[in-house]
Length: 278
Ligand SMILES: C[S@@+](CC[C@H](N)C(=O)[O-])C[C@H]1O[C@@H](n2cnc3c(N)ncnc32)[C@H](O)[C@@H]1O
Image (cartoon, rainbow, N blue to C red; front, side, top):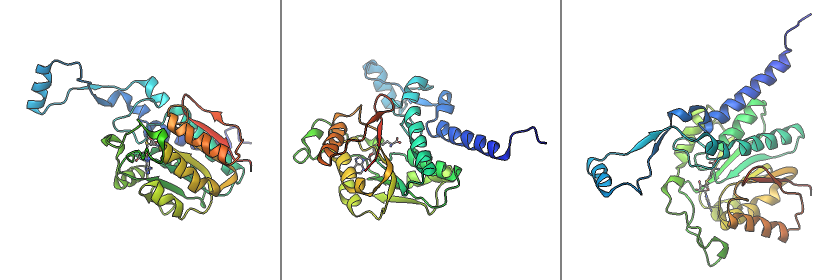
């Protein structure tokens, strides 16, 4: 009689380790000590700033802040996601829940930045041996739109369109998928502004709909186009509900307009989800 772990238990443990390792890599939590950050020079002397500029030098320091990174509360220099640990665990539990309950449909994130959450989604499907579902990767791949304040007054004062850090090309995201050996025919890119792409996107059915577009416009466009495709038993995950008033208002308006009363569950200081019951 064998006294060691069963094959099934060993496979389960290996799967847990893989998904955990994937999260540690995607967030760079495992390599924080190697990270290099630009030092904020706003309070440095004009002489120092002038010297750095003349010489073409940057002032940097090593090491990230583990608490900020775990909370998903900084913009990492190289990580594939800025989403924190609890919200990544929530993605995992939602994906595993739809797999366990056989809720039909694909997985999508609208607003992927460097692609980390969608890479995690694909990795979880691979770890569970899923051979059916696709992962949809939707973004402008050029950052946030200029707020259309006339149509969406809630977005006034929230212009991030000039923030270059948020503009990551589709090729960079594909390269990130490749780095983890997770780019295949079940990863589909939807490139362009949500208002143009999502209404006609060839997505048939969704089991997990993750919204991370920050603005009212980006959130309402994604909900309007994609919520009707979400299966009963599927999850809506909203990254910015706590942190971004425009996003919260879009979600609240959409829910009110469509009579959605499914309970909203908070995950951390900003992320929430609900499960579609009807
Ligand atoms: C905060 S980042 C997303 C972070 C990402 N989920 C992660 O794992 O780190 C927001 C992203 O949404 C995209 N975005 C926001 N509004 C958009 C819109 N209306 N159309 C297309 N892309 C949009 C931006 O290009 C950016 O990549």
